[in-house]
Length: 376
Image 1 (cartoon, rainbow, N blue to C red):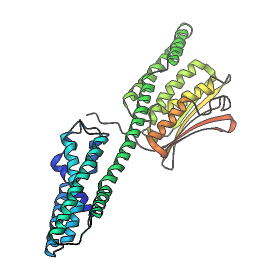
Image 2 (cartoon, helix red, strand yellow):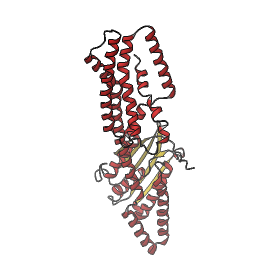
Image 3 (tube, one colour):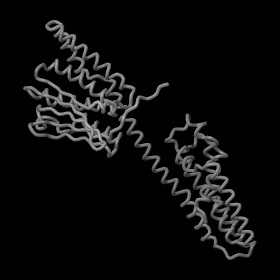
Image 4 (cartoon, rainbow, N blue to C red):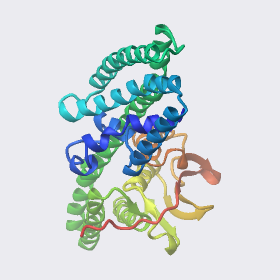
């Protein structure tokens, strides 16, 4: 028996009961809605529907011609509950818009399956008696029909529910991380602004030229950061520019204690880089490498391509890992969570010590070119 044929027949009601559902109801039915998942699982095309009808008609005609009444009875016993259950499930979801949860779907599925199986078994025995055939007994007929409907409808539906639940959890994690990122982008650390403005006021009295430089870098920093508030992805060029303004501010604040160097090839200008991810590493280097080190500290930012991957490194010769958080702080933990949510196992982060007391933070990301979204 052609299982694909029966599965297609069982789902044929979608076109009749929910015409163009994806177009008419995309605004009111979210992807996580149980009904949309069921309609997606029971989807089919017009050509598949017509092909199934032709195949079914051909099978029935051949069975009648060859007097295969036992085979026809078995086909009806197995196919009738499957088709009627699927059609009734689709009809109930179409008519009862408030009952689109999984509990309703399973209650409808079980109750309709039990009713249609009972009807199919009664009809099957009538068919067998009418044609004086040796068919299945009642227990065999019930068991065969239940197993057949469970394998073709119940098991796939359960698998789809599990996948839908996992997808919903993943989406919630993505939304939580996105909200956390938006909060991070939307706020400028109070002590960072306070220190910058306080230093500007001090310099305005004692060194007006440096005060103007500090305010210019602060304005440039904010101008670079604000566009990312509405952007899900940034570029290497934009993030390095943002880091440059931040480090320039810190260099004015710390004076000769802090120097920095940045380098990346022009070909990586438009390489995709999650917004504020580089800044997390730079801020970590300043906080744990410069503030904890009384002497001079140099921070180096580099980006390069290797084997189709983008390597971003932030290194400093400051306090070292012995005196700083060993990569387990809140900022770095959030960074790892963002990496996993965005790239899965395709990205990695490592914080390690190199030679000459050099602390190295390294990001390895898939190399993709970022294109600005079209807002037309």
